[in-house]
Image (cartoon, rainbow, N blue to C red; front, top):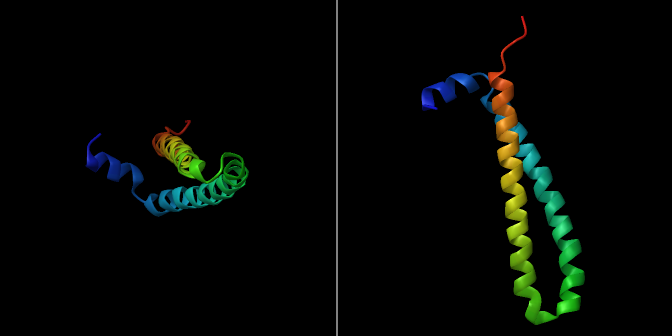
Length: 88
């Protein structure tokens, strides 16, 4: 897809798409932060101070994976909605 067709598809819907992505990412960030804290605290108490880097890196990698999946899925949904042919 060349940039001109991408601009044509999103013309008039750019800010709406951006705000939708932003709001979903904001909610996902808050949920993942709370979940990470709820998971990390008991695990740190179990594994001790030497296991903190391992737990922190594992939860960070999981959070990045979830953000990536959400971003791709939402981008695909927006693209499909914007390129859908109207039923005549």
